[in-house]
Length: 299
Image: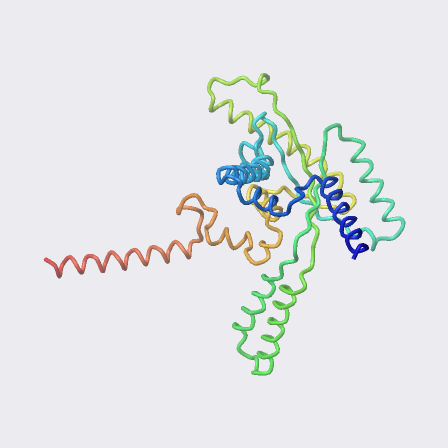
């Protein structure tokens, strides 16, 4: 009995020492009382502060990336400081299928072009999911137009189309798009104009002429290495940005479909084909004829 009392006393001393070292209340119900008796307004304030911190830390991605962009038009990206960016799409040569002599010739052409330029040129590479929806659609159209196909050929073609669609959705592949980025800042003080409209036109004209000169220089030089460069138009710049921020989404919701369905059109009077214009006119004439008929019956 004496030994049990000594062991109990020793355990109690260890417990008190542990609580003091951990800076916790010795009595357990004291700890529960302090947590439960905390004022409600204190808890609400702490939650509110935590919510406010999360809102402050949320990144403003698009605002930060495009805060300096003023407009995208005239095949250029314009910034607020009158800097303009023009982009050229590059169709590269298949370098590793060339012989040693041909590879050396390509290197010489590329190095000579780099040695001649005295302005900054950016290189932009973009990886996109391979989109084979257009070849699939062409296959489907050809199957419908062909009248000499038997049932076995039609079944084989349809199964092939289904396999391609499944392959694209389940095992996507990448393709690399290559671009040259030219940037030039226009000095407004060197331009004489009588009005703001004239000044604006001259700024755009001067920037575009200078950037096109740089693009054509690269185009003429790199053509010797079988590297083709073409101007990326305004719609191409929008497509480039669309694939940049919607890489996975762009596989199902293609930019080309958005353009054809006028989802990015500001007005309903956007450019249309002659066939669609005639179809809309026919519908309007039919509706006008029906309206006149109703008016005659009512009178």
